[in-house]
Each structure stands twice: as C-alpha cells, then as structure tokens.
Figure 1 (cartoon, helix red, strand yellow):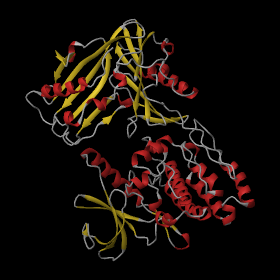
Figure 2 (tube, rainbow, N blue to C red):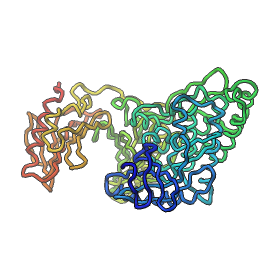
Figure 3 (cartoon, rainbow, N blue to C red):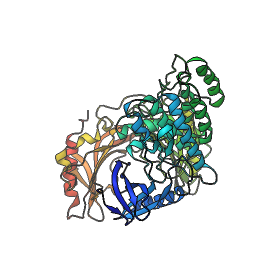
Length: 585
C-alpha cells in the first residue's frame, strides 16, 4: 500500500503511522466527510477454514466495538473490505502511544498509574453487563497518551491478538489456550503498566517462542521501580484470573496511586507505608504452586520461589509413578502395563467379567492451543475435560513448563466402566501427585542400546530427508523428549515421521515382512499409494515384570501425490535411520 491509495472506495491513505501487528496502520481521510480516521489492515490466517472463522470473528468484534461510546475509547467506525483484505476504521487520535513514550525510558509510577486508571475505566465500561466486550489486545501500542496525560484506548475489534508486541502482554490463561475474558484484559493492562515503569514487558524480550513459554508458566519477576504501584500490579498480574480485581476495582486502586506525590509513589515516606495497608486490604498475594510472588514495599524483595507444577527432565520423568492401579479397583481388576507403546506412556488395564477398559497416562509437549473441551483452573493448572469420542474420554493437564499430562479412559470391550469416570479418577490421582511435589524420576536409566537414548531427529540427515520432494529445506520438528521427529511441508503434504514404540514383536497388520539393514521389518503402503509405513525391530528386551518385549522403530513417509512404489523411498530412508541406531549389547 502507498500514500494516495483509495481503500474500499472510501478512505484515502495519507501516511503510515504504525506497524499494527499483523497488518499496517495508516492515517486516512474519509471521502465526502473529510474526516481523519485511523485505518488498520487486518491479516487473516492463510488456511481457508481458519481464515473464514477469523473473518467472522472480526466482523462480530468490530460490530460490538462500534457500540462503545466512552471518552477514553477511540470510536470504531466499521470494518471494510478491499482486494480481499479487511480494514478497520476508527477515530484518528493524534497522540503518541505508550510504547512511544517509554522508548526513551520508564515512566514514574504515579504517571503510569494515572494513565492506567483511565485505561482501566475504559475497560470497565466495555466489560459492563450491558456490553460485555473484551478488548483482547491491550498493549502499549494501543494506549495513546495526549496532552495532560489524557489516555485513549484503541484497538477494540482489531484482531491484533497474536501479534508479537501483543503476545508479550498476554495473560497466562490465554497463552495456555483459553479464550480471553475480562480478567485477561486486566492482566494485559497490568503488564502494560509494568512495562511502563520497568522498561520491559513482564514476559521478557526474547523471541516469540520464549515469550509464549514464559507466559504459559505465568511467573512475573517482581518490579524494582514500581513503588506504591507495586501492590496494584501484583493484584492485576495474579496468575489466577479469579484472584485479579475487576477493571473497575483496578481503576479505583490506580487512581489512589496517581493521587500520591511522586516521592510517595516511589514508596518513600508516609505514602509508601500507607500503601502497605491499602494493598493488604485490597489484595492478598499468595504463593500458590509457586506461580507468583510479589515484594512488599520497602528495601527487601521476596524472590519467586519457583514455577508451578512441572515435568522436569522429560527423558527421566516416570509416567507410571503417576498412575496407581489401586485407584481403579472400584471398576474391576487393575493390571499395570509399564512398557506398552512409547516411553512416555503408562497403562492400567481394567478387567470386569467380559468388559475391558484401559486408563492411560502420557506425557506430551504442549500444543500452541488447548485441546477442545471444557477448561478449568485448579491449583495453578489448566485442565481441559474433553467430551468422549468412540469410547475414549480424555483429560489434559497443562503444566507450567510447556508440557502436558494427557490422561484418558477408554473402553476396549463391552459397555462398562464409564470411560470418563476412569479418566476422572486418573486425573484426580495425577493432580494429587503433582500437589505433593515434582514428578518422580525413573528408578533406573534406560539400557545403553535402548531407542530411548537416541534423538529421533538425528537419525536422518538433510540428504535423506531431501529424497522426498518438497522436504529439501524443511527443518526437523522434535517431539516429546526427542523420542519422535517429523519433517513436514504443510503446503504440499509431504512428510517424514520417525517414532519409537514397544510391543511383542512386529504385528501381522504392520505389513509385508522383509529385512532392512539386517533387522526384521515390515512395510505397508497407504491405500492411496502416496505413503508408506515401515516398522523395524530394533532390539528384544525383558520388561520389569519379566515378560519379553521389543523396541520398534517406526518410519512413516508421505509424498505430495501418489507414486508407483511409495515404499521404495521409505525403505531407503529407513536404512539411513537404522544405520545410525546404537549397537545392541
């Protein structure tokens, strides 16, 4: 876009005034009225399904935002479409953003509080029962500050959520996949004010991945410059949404700080002492699962005691330590299976007459969003209870270090027991284990020749991966504990996946038997001839219970289109992987 372009036959672009997250922000003139507006281009996801959902969400958000009539909110004029792109028009405010104001240094706490009080008041108006509008993207660039520190909040209905300079201020529950509510806006405003007085956002200044990981953990380093503003920030930045004040309550507390003298706002003199008592009455800052610790005013600082429930070293975490067979005796006879499937998994089979079910606990790396289901928060953990599908009921516990504990109950034979009841028993037990302390470690290290000691991504070099068209420049994506790895071109569908499994030999349904690099193996082409599965027996071993078992290497290759012999290249790739396996003692 260039100066002079006419957008939707209505707005003439005059000057670009900001990056605007996923699009761009321009000052423009509305044709006919000559009114000056801020025009914000909105970027939509590339995937068609996500793009359409995002488009509908934006239209709904913009429609609601147009109802906002408040002196501290930039009015939203509407959403227009131009060349397939959406543009949001709002009233133009000729004022720098809070990001601009703090570019040369932090603000004094009383000044930040005065600006924040106006923003909180604007949010309280939007959150009111009559409107119930959530901003979703409160951040310094959406807080405009004019003469006399008059604040205007912009960005309502803009779809800016997900932009890097918004993600740095996102609430922990949103980083963990929950939809933002009013309390998420309160957190983001607190994070914005934190950055204004500290000179950096609460989740640090790393790359987007580091920022999201920090946000998911929810640990905010106590500020050192906030003075009397500190206790208010403590309440606004509480990791648990229900412990935060409402926007109206935050506005009242911020107003009180803004009325203090600059010396008092630094925590000096009577004002600082008075705020200790105001803070004690207004907010009780607790250490729940180590999620947030805030200093009291004064020279001493209480440091964070550590993160909430974490998995620790993935390779040494013991999944079976969190699944006790005795919990399931109410359903039938429980049988512990320590070595079924991957190394990150534990099973308890339940037998009751002809009926059979399984309770399963599995460690996984957390996805970018939570699974579908009903989320809740308990003791610093986000728990998602998903609806049963095909006789399986899943519960997901999101830990604070970017890992999940996936718990499930599944029917294998017959109608009983209730798989969700099984999953809930396993979930309650896992929660109790996490409340008692760190996840226990495995009682002994893996055998020297075990696949568990091998980085799956290291089994293939770039030359091997490039055998599949479309993967020449694709980087590996490691899974949990590097026990699986995939290379995928999402545009074409070409992919290679390597994973580890444990079973009693190679099952007949694995495909046609053959030998690969001196190992027993089986190959099975996909029905559409665009892919092939290769199963390779790495080594036999004895389970802790004395039963024989085998470690298996699984190689899956998918081509962009069907080919005459999809297994030929899969075998070549599997041979490269097998050559890099450790020797079996």
